[in-house]
Image (cartoon, rainbow, N blue to C red; front, top):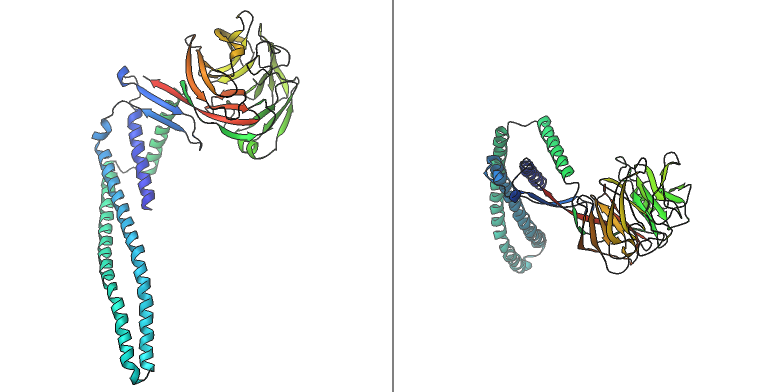
Length: 455
């Protein structure tokens, strides 16, 4: 119980400190800007966000915070007292058990004296005296129990003081009732959500070790979830191979995908080309085999809702990624929407990046880069920036970044663990803040770390 109270007080204290910090998240001088490193999830699925904030002194001067800290220290002292008492009790119980055995032995000796003859009295008396000598060391144990009883009384007094302090604190805070506390918690959640919206985008600074979700299929393929799926919709979409296939598997959840072979099969009207497919808002977008046509197929109606040619885009292994596999046109999604990565003769086989209207498939805007498409291992989009790997096998890293916000590029060095030695698909999901990869017949996830600056 005391541990639960201590945890609750820790949480309450942290909430107050967080509330105080986020009220200061508005404009501030550059030297006091918030610097935030955030990662979508850790290996146990927990959200991770590390904040390096300007020095705050308001909380340390707040009287209520000081009282809460004093209260927390008292609770910790009580916990230490309980621990000491528990250790002594465990130790002394061994003496008590020994004393019980000795007393039973002494009782048996008295019975023998009562039932024996007078000639045995002297010998029995010496034996009883020896037993009494063995019991003599137990007397200090009883004294120690008296001291422990005093400790218990002190603990009760300390608990009473804490109760009084809690009452005083409650009066100072205005006697908060449930509705008021609930209202404050909801307000804090809204403020945290608003902050997270500001943290939606950032610059890639790190990629975690891979998490293997399943081992299945051929050497090449793609798998994904829908970043615009409604709450509770955790379906997984699975496409084995890179050409001449038109069957898409639908698993109801990530758990089903990992543990069973229960799936629904969708037959596409045309086979796909490459591994650059993406599921977005209930439809799958893919490159039709041996063409530069993009198809939008609606899963709910099992019909093509839109198709359009991507003018001048190379296809049929003209401008593939370095691993081949008809990977000429790579469709992807980030926080900003739907993108197509490809190459053209007009751009000398270098990567062209186009943002697409997801409804009409028309090009909204295009950017030309200086990176040869065939030299790229794989690529993905995060927050309007295209990230390119230096290869698909062996030692792999993300080494090239092109920002559509500034139309500039830079060379970077972010290691990417290529656990199974052959990447044929690497795509970012903005809802999960993770990279989905197909690695030599293994479906894996990578968590990403983004760097943010809030002014």
